Every structure is written in C-alpha cells, then in structure tokens.
Image 1 (tube, rainbow, N blue to C red):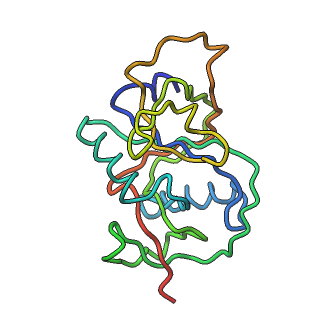
Image 2 (cartoon, rainbow, N blue to C red; image 1 turned 90 degrees about the vertical axis):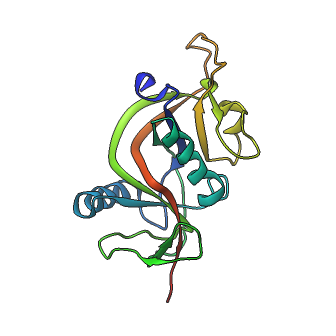
Length: 194
C-alpha cells in the first residue's frame, strides 16, 4: 500500500466505515460490487461536512486530475451502529441545483452525499497518517494524524512534501480494509423526491 498510495499523484480520501442505515458492511460491499459490475460504477453514500461534495471532494479531485493522478477511497473498518432508515435516494446532483435520476440498478441508502466509485476491493494494508496532510479546506496543511482524531472520521489527504522518514514502529498508522477508485465528478448531493 505504501508504494500505491504515497506519491504526489495520488489523493487519499480516508473514511471510517461500518454498518450504515442498518446494513452490515459485508452486505454493503457485496451490493456495491454488483452495482459496479452491472452499471460500471457505484455510489458510496456518506454524511458529514468534512468531505462536503462541492467545497471539499470535487476541488480535491480536480487538484489530482491536474497532476495526472487519481483519488483513492481508503476505508478503515470500525464498529458502528448507524440506525438511519433505509431510505433510497432517487436523485443525485453535482451542484445541488440540477438533479438527475439515480439509475435503478444503483441503491444508496440513508445518506446525504455519495462518492462515485469503481474498482472496489478488500485489502489488508496500512496508511501512515503521519506522512499525510489535509489537502483542501480550512485545515489544509494540517498533519493527517492530528486531523483524524476524536469524531473526525473522514478526510481528503495527500502525501506531505515535508514528511520525514520516521521509525515505522513510532509512526501513527491506521489499517485500511477496503479501497476504491473515485472517478469524476467525484462526489454528489443526494435526495429523495418522494
């Protein structure tokens, strides 16, 4: 994972994941894999403003697009008990103004936002947060390991150009259990019209 992630052309959207809208993570993974197989992409739903579609994720995607790079969704599995209703979003929007129907083969449940993903796969890797910084927003430049604390469960990160080689035993790392590539337009707003 170090070789795949830690370069200046790969952005890392870090996210803690688990049960969501009363659905266990394994069921979500299976459903998303089928959506990618059938539709060519899936929508990975989420909430919270630390990765707001238009102010964080889309600008983050454009930065790495200009560098000729890519954005990887790197997910750390955690225990969660998200009890939101399983309400399916039926419309998505890049800007929150112009809406289009979500294809019938894609189901995103109990979420305000979604990432457009493909190539979802389980992994057993490590992400050294000490070697990353926040890439966009008010906390831009803050060390990833200091930003991901307490209630912060997602972040747009990049390799720190000033990262010093540290003793791997002392480095703050997180286990990454699931990875997907995020593709244009990177993130959407969601709503249910009914």
